[in-house]
Amino acid sequence: MAREFRTVRRPASMDTPEFDLAYVRAHRGAGVPVVIIPGGPGLGSVRVYGGLRRSAPDLDIVMVEHRGVGYSRRDLTGAELPASAMTVAAAVDDIAAVLDAEHIDRAVIVGSSYGTYLAQGFGVRHPERVVAMVLDSTLLSAQDHDAVRAHARRLLWEGERGPTAAAARRIRRLVEKEGADPLPLGATSAFLYEFGGVPRLERYLEQRARHRTGLVDRTFRVARTHGTARSVPYVMEFGLVGNLATRELQYAPAPDGLIFDPAYATAGLLARFPAFEKEPFDLPAALPRFDWPVVVLTGERDLTTPPSVAKRTAALARRSRFVRVPGIGHSVLDSHPEALLAAIRALLRGEPISLGGLRRRGLTRHLAPAIGGLLAVDRLSAALLRDAPSGRDGVDGRDGADGPDGPGIEGRDPMDEEQPSAPRP
Image 1 (tube, helix red, strand yellow):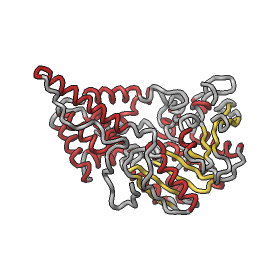
Image 2 (image 1 turned 120 degrees about the vertical axis):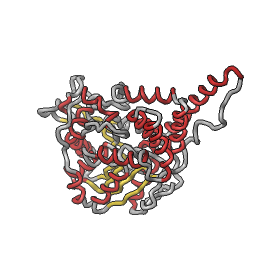
Image 3 (image 1 turned 90 degrees about the vertical axis):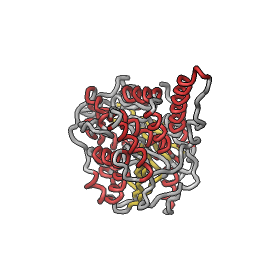
Image 4 (image 1 turned 45 degrees about the vertical axis):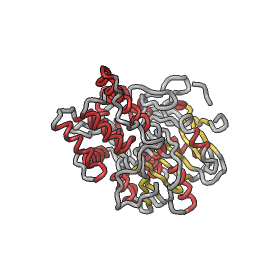
Protein backbone atom coordinates (compact mmCIF):
# COMPACT_ATOMS: atom_id res chain seq x y z
CA MET A 1 0.00 0.00 0.00
CA ALA A 2 2.95 2.36 0.55
CA ARG A 3 3.44 2.65 -3.21
CA GLU A 4 -0.23 3.53 -3.67
CA PHE A 5 -0.33 6.18 -0.93
CA ARG A 6 -0.05 9.84 -1.90
CA THR A 7 -1.08 13.28 -0.67
CA VAL A 8 -2.01 16.51 -2.35
CA ARG A 9 -1.71 19.87 -0.58
CA ARG A 10 -5.07 21.60 -0.22
CA PRO A 11 -4.79 25.37 0.10
CA ALA A 12 -6.10 27.42 2.99
CA SER A 13 -9.41 29.23 2.65
CA MET A 14 -11.63 31.26 4.93
CA ASP A 15 -13.08 28.06 6.39
CA THR A 16 -10.17 25.62 6.06
CA PRO A 17 -6.51 25.67 7.04
CA GLU A 18 -3.91 24.28 4.67
CA PHE A 19 -3.76 20.49 4.92
CA ASP A 20 -2.61 17.39 3.08
CA LEU A 21 -5.39 15.34 1.51
CA ALA A 22 -4.52 11.64 1.34
CA TYR A 23 -5.47 9.29 -1.47
CA VAL A 24 -4.44 6.00 -3.04
CA ARG A 25 -4.07 4.94 -6.65
CA ALA A 26 -3.72 1.27 -7.55
CA HIS A 27 -2.82 -0.28 -10.91
CA ARG A 28 -1.99 2.95 -12.70
CA GLY A 29 -2.40 2.60 -16.46
CA ALA A 30 -4.71 -0.42 -16.29
CA GLY A 31 -7.37 1.45 -18.25
CA VAL A 32 -9.74 4.37 -17.77
CA PRO A 33 -9.24 5.56 -14.18
CA VAL A 34 -12.05 4.66 -11.78
CA VAL A 35 -12.69 6.86 -8.73
CA ILE A 36 -14.48 4.90 -5.96
CA ILE A 37 -16.07 6.99 -3.19
CA PRO A 38 -17.15 5.12 -0.02
CA GLY A 39 -20.11 6.02 2.16
CA GLY A 40 -20.62 7.03 5.74
CA PRO A 41 -19.84 9.84 5.77
CA GLY A 42 -16.80 8.88 7.76
CA LEU A 43 -15.58 5.70 6.14
CA GLY A 44 -11.86 5.67 5.42
CA SER A 45 -10.51 4.72 2.01
CA VAL A 46 -6.81 4.03 2.48
CA ARG A 47 -6.94 1.13 4.93
CA VAL A 48 -10.49 -0.13 4.64
CA TYR A 49 -10.53 -0.99 0.94
CA GLY A 50 -7.04 -2.36 0.35
CA GLY A 51 -8.50 -5.79 -0.33
CA LEU A 52 -10.91 -4.37 -2.89
CA ARG A 53 -8.08 -2.71 -4.79
CA ARG A 54 -5.94 -5.84 -4.72
CA SER A 55 -8.83 -7.89 -6.07
CA ALA A 56 -9.11 -5.75 -9.22
CA PRO A 57 -5.68 -5.55 -10.88
CA ASP A 58 -7.40 -4.82 -14.19
CA LEU A 59 -8.82 -1.52 -12.91
CA ASP A 60 -6.93 1.74 -12.35
CA ILE A 61 -8.58 2.63 -9.01
CA VAL A 62 -8.34 5.98 -7.23
CA MET A 63 -9.76 6.43 -3.72
CA VAL A 64 -9.67 9.68 -1.76
CA GLU A 65 -9.49 9.77 2.04
CA HIS A 66 -12.36 12.15 2.84
CA ARG A 67 -11.38 15.39 4.55
CA GLY A 68 -11.78 15.04 8.31
CA VAL A 69 -11.21 11.27 8.18
CA GLY A 70 -8.12 9.15 8.80
CA TYR A 71 -5.05 10.43 6.98
CA SER A 72 -6.91 13.59 5.91
CA ARG A 73 -8.00 14.58 9.39
CA ARG A 74 -5.32 17.11 10.46
CA ASP A 75 -3.81 20.34 9.20
CA LEU A 76 -0.10 21.00 8.75
CA THR A 77 0.33 21.85 12.46
CA GLY A 78 -1.19 18.54 13.55
CA ALA A 79 -4.47 20.07 14.74
CA GLU A 80 -7.77 18.56 13.66
CA LEU A 81 -9.53 20.30 10.81
CA PRO A 82 -12.30 22.59 12.04
CA ALA A 83 -15.99 21.90 11.62
CA SER A 84 -16.15 24.79 9.14
CA ALA A 85 -13.94 22.79 6.75
CA MET A 86 -16.55 20.05 6.49
CA THR A 87 -18.69 20.81 3.44
CA VAL A 88 -19.92 18.63 0.61
CA ALA A 89 -18.72 21.08 -2.04
CA ALA A 90 -15.19 21.05 -0.60
CA ALA A 91 -15.18 17.23 -0.52
CA VAL A 92 -16.28 17.19 -4.17
CA ASP A 93 -13.50 19.59 -5.15
CA ASP A 94 -11.01 17.42 -3.24
CA ILE A 95 -11.71 14.68 -5.78
CA ALA A 96 -10.99 17.07 -8.65
CA ALA A 97 -7.73 18.10 -6.93
CA VAL A 98 -6.62 14.47 -6.79
CA LEU A 99 -7.39 14.01 -10.49
CA ASP A 100 -5.31 17.11 -11.19
CA ALA A 101 -2.42 15.76 -9.11
CA GLU A 102 -2.57 12.47 -11.03
CA HIS A 103 -2.91 14.19 -14.43
CA ILE A 104 -6.25 12.46 -15.01
CA ASP A 105 -8.50 14.40 -17.36
CA ARG A 106 -11.59 12.17 -17.12
CA ALA A 107 -12.63 9.19 -15.02
CA VAL A 108 -15.46 6.83 -14.19
CA ILE A 109 -16.98 8.14 -10.95
CA VAL A 110 -18.34 5.48 -8.59
CA GLY A 111 -20.12 6.32 -5.35
CA SER A 112 -21.66 4.20 -2.61
CA SER A 113 -24.35 5.51 -0.25
CA TYR A 114 -23.20 8.98 0.89
CA GLY A 115 -20.53 8.62 -1.79
CA THR A 116 -23.28 8.73 -4.43
CA TYR A 117 -24.11 12.27 -3.32
CA LEU A 118 -20.45 13.23 -3.80
CA ALA A 119 -20.38 11.43 -7.15
CA GLN A 120 -23.44 13.29 -8.41
CA GLY A 121 -22.12 16.53 -6.93
CA PHE A 122 -18.91 15.93 -8.89
CA GLY A 123 -21.06 15.62 -12.01
CA VAL A 124 -22.63 18.99 -11.22
CA ARG A 125 -19.37 20.85 -10.53
CA HIS A 126 -17.03 19.04 -12.93
CA PRO A 127 -19.16 17.50 -15.71
CA GLU A 128 -16.36 17.66 -18.29
CA ARG A 129 -14.34 15.16 -16.23
CA VAL A 130 -16.93 12.36 -16.08
CA VAL A 131 -16.70 9.38 -18.45
CA ALA A 132 -19.50 7.43 -16.78
CA MET A 133 -21.02 6.97 -13.35
CA VAL A 134 -22.00 4.09 -11.06
CA LEU A 135 -24.34 4.95 -8.19
CA ASP A 136 -24.63 2.24 -5.52
CA SER A 137 -27.33 2.66 -2.85
CA THR A 138 -28.26 6.11 -4.04
CA LEU A 139 -28.68 9.17 -1.87
CA LEU A 140 -30.65 11.70 -3.90
CA SER A 141 -31.91 14.38 -1.54
CA ALA A 142 -31.91 15.62 2.05
CA GLN A 143 -35.59 14.59 2.05
CA ASP A 144 -34.89 10.92 1.33
CA HIS A 145 -35.95 10.01 4.89
CA ASP A 146 -39.58 10.30 3.74
CA ALA A 147 -39.00 7.54 1.19
CA VAL A 148 -37.12 5.47 3.78
CA ARG A 149 -40.06 5.62 6.18
CA ALA A 150 -42.62 4.78 3.51
CA HIS A 151 -40.65 1.84 2.13
CA ALA A 152 -39.95 0.20 5.50
CA ARG A 153 -43.53 0.59 6.66
CA ARG A 154 -44.93 -0.81 3.45
CA LEU A 155 -42.73 -3.89 3.75
CA LEU A 156 -42.66 -4.58 7.48
CA TRP A 157 -45.77 -2.96 8.92
CA GLU A 158 -48.40 -3.06 6.21
CA GLY A 159 -46.86 -6.23 4.75
CA GLU A 160 -47.98 -5.63 1.19
CA ARG A 161 -45.30 -7.90 -0.31
CA GLY A 162 -45.63 -11.64 0.14
CA PRO A 163 -42.22 -12.57 1.61
CA THR A 164 -42.53 -10.02 4.44
CA ALA A 165 -46.25 -10.38 5.12
CA ALA A 166 -45.81 -12.94 7.94
CA ALA A 167 -43.10 -10.85 9.59
CA ALA A 168 -45.29 -7.74 9.37
CA ARG A 169 -48.14 -9.57 11.10
CA ARG A 170 -45.79 -10.65 13.90
CA ILE A 171 -44.49 -7.11 14.36
CA ARG A 172 -48.00 -5.66 14.53
CA ARG A 173 -49.00 -8.35 17.03
CA LEU A 174 -46.03 -7.56 19.26
CA VAL A 175 -46.90 -3.86 19.24
CA GLU A 176 -50.69 -3.99 19.35
CA LYS A 177 -51.25 -7.10 21.48
CA GLU A 178 -48.08 -7.50 23.52
CA GLY A 179 -47.34 -3.83 24.14
CA ALA A 180 -43.82 -3.83 22.67
CA ASP A 181 -42.20 -0.42 22.29
CA PRO A 182 -42.53 0.14 18.52
CA LEU A 183 -39.45 2.32 17.99
CA PRO A 184 -36.68 -0.04 19.20
CA LEU A 185 -38.59 -3.04 17.84
CA GLY A 186 -38.81 -1.36 14.45
CA ALA A 187 -35.13 -0.40 14.41
CA THR A 188 -34.03 -3.93 15.32
CA SER A 189 -36.44 -5.54 12.85
CA ALA A 190 -35.31 -3.29 10.02
CA PHE A 191 -31.66 -4.14 10.62
CA LEU A 192 -32.38 -7.87 10.84
CA TYR A 193 -34.35 -7.81 7.59
CA GLU A 194 -31.74 -5.77 5.74
CA PHE A 195 -28.66 -7.70 6.83
CA GLY A 196 -30.06 -11.05 7.92
CA GLY A 197 -32.99 -11.62 5.59
CA VAL A 198 -36.57 -12.70 6.18
CA PRO A 199 -35.78 -16.08 7.84
CA ARG A 200 -33.66 -14.50 10.57
CA LEU A 201 -36.16 -11.69 11.09
CA GLU A 202 -38.97 -14.20 11.50
CA ARG A 203 -36.83 -16.27 13.86
CA TYR A 204 -36.16 -13.19 15.97
CA LEU A 205 -39.84 -12.23 16.09
CA GLU A 206 -40.84 -15.76 17.05
CA GLN A 207 -38.30 -15.81 19.87
CA ARG A 208 -39.24 -12.27 20.91
CA ALA A 209 -42.83 -13.39 21.42
CA ARG A 210 -41.47 -16.06 23.79
CA HIS A 211 -39.11 -13.64 25.58
CA ARG A 212 -36.03 -15.36 24.20
CA THR A 213 -34.14 -12.44 22.64
CA GLY A 214 -32.35 -10.90 25.62
CA LEU A 215 -28.85 -10.99 24.13
CA VAL A 216 -29.99 -9.77 20.71
CA ASP A 217 -31.99 -6.91 22.20
CA ARG A 218 -29.15 -5.83 24.50
CA THR A 219 -26.70 -5.92 21.59
CA PHE A 220 -28.87 -3.70 19.42
CA ARG A 221 -29.64 -1.36 22.31
CA VAL A 222 -25.92 -0.81 22.89
CA ALA A 223 -25.32 -0.39 19.15
CA ARG A 224 -28.06 2.26 18.88
CA THR A 225 -26.74 4.10 21.92
CA HIS A 226 -23.08 4.16 20.91
CA GLY A 227 -23.11 3.61 17.16
CA THR A 228 -22.18 7.14 16.07
CA ALA A 229 -20.53 8.16 19.34
CA ARG A 230 -17.55 5.86 18.86
CA SER A 231 -15.07 5.76 16.03
CA VAL A 232 -12.35 3.45 14.80
CA PRO A 233 -9.39 5.52 13.59
CA TYR A 234 -8.71 5.20 9.86
CA VAL A 235 -11.80 2.98 9.50
CA MET A 236 -14.91 4.93 10.52
CA GLU A 237 -14.64 8.47 11.91
CA PHE A 238 -17.92 10.34 12.09
CA GLY A 239 -16.82 12.99 14.59
CA LEU A 240 -15.86 15.73 12.11
CA VAL A 241 -17.85 14.82 9.02
CA GLY A 242 -20.99 14.60 11.15
CA ASN A 243 -21.10 18.37 10.79
CA LEU A 244 -21.79 18.20 7.05
CA ALA A 245 -24.06 15.18 7.49
CA THR A 246 -26.51 17.02 9.71
CA ARG A 247 -26.04 20.57 8.40
CA GLU A 248 -26.20 19.85 4.64
CA LEU A 249 -27.81 16.42 4.23
CA GLN A 250 -30.26 16.32 7.16
CA TYR A 251 -28.97 13.09 8.70
CA ALA A 252 -31.03 13.92 11.81
CA PRO A 253 -34.51 14.81 10.54
CA ALA A 254 -37.39 15.55 12.89
CA PRO A 255 -38.83 12.25 14.20
CA ASP A 256 -42.45 11.48 13.45
CA GLY A 257 -42.71 9.12 16.45
CA LEU A 258 -43.97 6.13 14.47
CA ILE A 259 -42.44 2.71 13.91
CA PHE A 260 -39.70 2.38 11.27
CA ASP A 261 -38.71 6.04 11.52
CA PRO A 262 -35.02 6.41 10.57
CA ALA A 263 -34.89 9.55 12.72
CA TYR A 264 -35.22 7.38 15.83
CA ALA A 265 -31.63 6.20 15.46
CA THR A 266 -30.17 9.62 14.61
CA ALA A 267 -32.15 11.99 16.84
CA GLY A 268 -29.30 12.19 19.34
CA LEU A 269 -26.95 13.67 16.74
CA LEU A 270 -28.47 17.13 17.11
CA ALA A 271 -27.04 17.37 20.61
CA ARG A 272 -23.55 17.20 19.07
CA PHE A 273 -23.91 18.55 15.55
CA PRO A 274 -25.58 21.54 13.87
CA ALA A 275 -29.16 21.51 12.67
CA PHE A 276 -30.02 21.17 9.00
CA GLU A 277 -29.62 24.37 6.98
CA LYS A 278 -29.61 23.66 3.26
CA GLU A 279 -28.31 20.96 0.98
CA PRO A 280 -25.63 21.98 -1.52
CA PHE A 281 -27.10 20.59 -4.75
CA ASP A 282 -30.50 20.04 -6.34
CA LEU A 283 -29.67 16.61 -7.72
CA PRO A 284 -33.14 15.78 -9.10
CA ALA A 285 -32.86 18.92 -11.25
CA ALA A 286 -29.26 18.16 -12.26
CA LEU A 287 -29.58 14.49 -13.22
CA PRO A 288 -31.42 15.06 -16.53
CA ARG A 289 -28.43 17.12 -17.66
CA PHE A 290 -25.93 14.29 -17.13
CA ASP A 291 -24.98 13.18 -20.65
CA TRP A 292 -22.89 10.15 -19.68
CA PRO A 293 -23.93 6.54 -18.95
CA VAL A 294 -25.22 6.01 -15.40
CA VAL A 295 -25.60 2.61 -13.73
CA VAL A 296 -27.81 2.63 -10.64
CA LEU A 297 -27.36 -0.33 -8.28
CA THR A 298 -29.61 -1.19 -5.35
CA GLY A 299 -29.64 -4.07 -2.89
CA GLU A 300 -33.03 -5.75 -2.92
CA ARG A 301 -33.32 -5.57 0.90
CA ASP A 302 -31.95 -2.03 1.25
CA LEU A 303 -33.94 -0.09 3.85
CA THR A 304 -31.29 2.64 4.31
CA THR A 305 -31.41 4.00 0.76
CA PRO A 306 -34.46 2.17 -0.57
CA PRO A 307 -35.01 0.97 -4.13
CA SER A 308 -37.66 3.63 -4.66
CA VAL A 309 -34.93 6.30 -4.48
CA ALA A 310 -32.72 4.30 -6.84
CA LYS A 311 -35.56 3.93 -9.34
CA ARG A 312 -36.25 7.65 -9.23
CA THR A 313 -32.56 8.35 -9.82
CA ALA A 314 -32.50 6.02 -12.82
CA ALA A 315 -35.66 7.60 -14.21
CA LEU A 316 -34.15 11.09 -13.99
CA ALA A 317 -30.83 10.22 -15.65
CA ARG A 318 -31.03 10.22 -19.45
CA ARG A 319 -28.71 7.25 -20.13
CA SER A 320 -29.30 4.99 -17.17
CA ARG A 321 -29.45 1.31 -16.31
CA PHE A 322 -31.17 0.16 -13.12
CA VAL A 323 -29.86 -3.07 -11.56
CA ARG A 324 -31.27 -4.72 -8.45
CA VAL A 325 -28.65 -6.85 -6.69
CA PRO A 326 -30.28 -9.88 -5.06
CA GLY A 327 -29.64 -11.19 -1.56
CA ILE A 328 -28.16 -8.05 0.02
CA GLY A 329 -29.18 -4.89 1.83
CA HIS A 330 -27.42 -1.55 1.90
CA SER A 331 -24.19 -0.74 0.01
CA VAL A 332 -23.13 -3.12 -2.74
CA LEU A 333 -19.56 -1.90 -2.16
CA ASP A 334 -19.60 -3.24 1.39
CA SER A 335 -22.03 -6.14 1.00
CA HIS A 336 -21.03 -7.56 -2.39
CA PRO A 337 -18.01 -5.74 -3.87
CA GLU A 338 -17.56 -8.30 -6.63
CA ALA A 339 -20.96 -7.23 -7.97
CA LEU A 340 -19.88 -3.60 -7.96
CA LEU A 341 -16.64 -4.41 -9.77
CA ALA A 342 -18.54 -6.52 -12.31
CA ALA A 343 -20.85 -3.58 -13.00
CA ILE A 344 -17.87 -1.26 -13.49
CA ARG A 345 -16.19 -3.69 -15.90
CA ALA A 346 -19.38 -4.17 -17.91
CA LEU A 347 -19.85 -0.42 -18.12
CA LEU A 348 -16.30 0.11 -19.37
CA ARG A 349 -16.71 -2.63 -21.99
CA GLY A 350 -20.17 -1.54 -23.09
CA GLU A 351 -21.58 -4.96 -22.18
CA PRO A 352 -24.75 -6.08 -20.36
CA ILE A 353 -24.35 -6.30 -16.59
CA SER A 354 -24.42 -9.89 -15.33
CA LEU A 355 -23.96 -10.63 -11.64
CA GLY A 356 -24.51 -14.38 -11.55
CA GLY A 357 -21.99 -16.72 -9.94
CA LEU A 358 -20.05 -14.06 -8.03
CA ARG A 359 -18.63 -14.81 -4.62
CA ARG A 360 -19.70 -12.66 -1.66
CA ARG A 361 -16.65 -11.06 -0.04
CA GLY A 362 -18.05 -7.84 1.43
CA LEU A 363 -17.23 -6.28 4.77
CA THR A 364 -20.80 -6.93 5.98
CA ARG A 365 -20.95 -10.59 4.92
CA HIS A 366 -20.39 -11.73 8.52
CA LEU A 367 -23.42 -9.89 9.87
CA ALA A 368 -25.99 -12.52 8.88
CA PRO A 369 -24.14 -15.45 10.54
CA ALA A 370 -23.46 -13.27 13.59
CA ILE A 371 -27.17 -12.46 13.90
CA GLY A 372 -27.99 -16.15 13.60
CA GLY A 373 -25.42 -16.93 16.29
CA LEU A 374 -26.91 -14.41 18.73
CA LEU A 375 -30.36 -15.86 18.17
CA ALA A 376 -29.04 -19.38 18.74
CA VAL A 377 -27.40 -18.34 22.01
CA ASP A 378 -30.64 -16.72 23.19
CA ARG A 379 -32.63 -19.81 22.25
CA LEU A 380 -30.17 -22.14 23.95
CA SER A 381 -29.98 -20.01 27.09
CA ALA A 382 -33.75 -19.97 27.40
CA ALA A 383 -33.90 -23.73 26.89
CA LEU A 384 -31.21 -24.41 29.51
CA LEU A 385 -32.92 -22.20 32.08
CA ARG A 386 -36.29 -23.80 31.40
CA ASP A 387 -35.11 -27.39 31.44
CA ALA A 388 -32.26 -27.32 33.92
CA PRO A 389 -34.10 -29.33 36.62
CA SER A 390 -34.94 -32.16 34.24
CA GLY A 391 -31.58 -32.19 32.49
CA ARG A 392 -33.06 -31.77 29.01
CA ASP A 393 -31.32 -29.41 26.63
CA GLY A 394 -34.52 -28.22 24.97
CA VAL A 395 -32.78 -27.26 21.73
CA ASP A 396 -35.16 -27.29 18.75
CA GLY A 397 -32.63 -28.63 16.28
CA ARG A 398 -32.32 -25.54 14.12
CA ASP A 399 -28.97 -23.85 13.87
CA GLY A 400 -28.47 -20.10 14.20
CA ALA A 401 -27.33 -19.38 10.65
CA ASP A 402 -28.16 -20.23 7.07
CA GLY A 403 -24.63 -20.46 5.73
CA PRO A 404 -21.79 -18.04 5.12
CA ASP A 405 -23.74 -15.74 2.86
CA GLY A 406 -27.06 -15.74 4.66
CA PRO A 407 -30.43 -17.00 3.44
CA GLY A 408 -31.66 -17.15 -0.10
CA ILE A 409 -33.20 -14.31 -2.07
CA GLU A 410 -36.34 -12.74 -0.65
CA GLY A 411 -38.58 -9.89 -1.67
CA ARG A 412 -38.06 -9.83 -5.42
CA ASP A 413 -40.04 -7.33 -7.40
CA PRO A 414 -41.08 -8.99 -10.70
CA MET A 415 -41.25 -5.56 -12.35
CA ASP A 416 -37.52 -4.99 -11.92
CA GLU A 417 -34.81 -6.07 -14.33
CA GLU A 418 -33.22 -8.28 -11.71
CA GLN A 419 -29.82 -9.93 -11.90
CA PRO A 420 -29.05 -13.51 -10.86
CA SER A 421 -28.20 -14.03 -7.97
CA ALA A 422 -1.41 6.14 12.98
CA PRO A 423 1.77 5.57 10.95
CA ARG A 424 1.50 6.13 7.23
CA PRO A 425 1.20 2.99 5.17
